[in-house]
Length: 232
Image 1: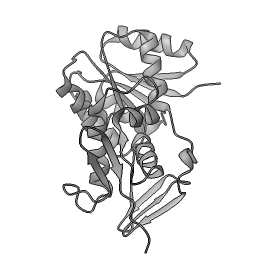
Image 2: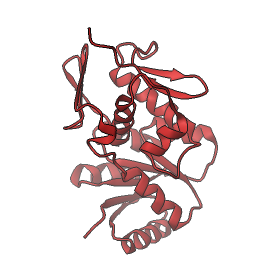
Image 3: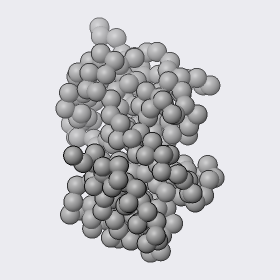
């Protein structure tokens, strides 16, 4: 039984062959694409659980491809980059990636990143509410659907799980490490930039005024807190 379907996008044939062989041996079904343009076609024609997307490719680069894919799909995306600068990593996350991995990398590290990207909190995680209404926002955790001002809001699985964990522990500051390990897994904890990017993305999607958040508040030097107004 397949563990999931993965699309490998890289302009180097040897990398595509190595990744296809390694991932297939672990039980994943693997397709590949040579360019960002080919990746967009593949995503339109097939359903994938995860995309491994190289950041540096001729023609359409990985960041542009990631942004375009994210505009219409909730598929998990891991960016592959040869650069280790924080600005490059943040750019990948800003484009909509769930994670990134720096070349060269070993198979165990890649497999761990894939498991983390595909990791989902159970629907009843932390015993939180199944349905939450906040003025003009409705969040249905049973169906994993969010609407704001009557319009459905598309959240990636990681964005949804982060929101769910915060709302399951309302009005309580939660540390960066605890959030990262709860949503991404026990191998995470120091990647504070992940949370900055994902919280900003959530604010843009659910806050009435993202620059002056009402619900998703930053706790300086600690983490984040979701403000759940008391019913009157």
